[in-house]
Image 1 (cartoon, rainbow, N blue to C red):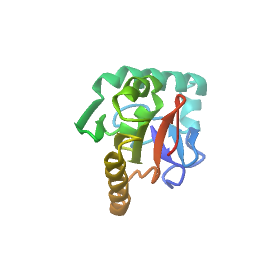
Image 2 (cartoon, rainbow, N blue to C red; image 1 turned 30 degrees about the vertical axis):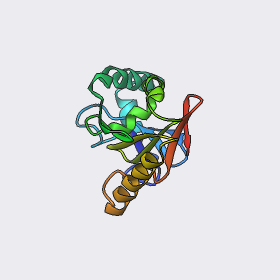
Image 3 (cartoon, one colour; image 1 turned 180 degrees about the vertical axis):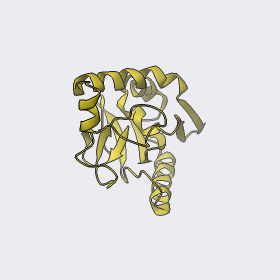
Image 4 (cartoon, rainbow, N blue to C red; image 1 turned 90 degrees about the vertical axis):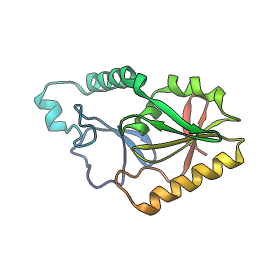
Length: 161
């Protein structure tokens, strides 16, 4: 799952991998997701190498992709994925398949772990809606905030828009 590097609930005791400047990848042992991230001491106790943890997490995420739903109307769509919406950013194949469905480059807003807004770079209205949605989430100051900036899918990876 994605977490903000500024989230004080997590620290160097947790197994974290860098992802974007302000976002890291954390690992949970399963439902309920997000309640606790795997710590280094737990990893040592269950005797799973970090590399295997990462492979297992990617496999689990890919297996769960059937439960991802896209809803709403263009020019801005939303993802639904059981509170793990932002984690879908980690599955390149999902975005490669969706990229042709939007005008211009694929652009997303990911203001919180459970919020992903999708639009295209050539949709002025979609970009405005995505920006407003991100602003509202940050204004509400809810839990698990991630990114104020929109991201663009370019050359098979996410970058700041």
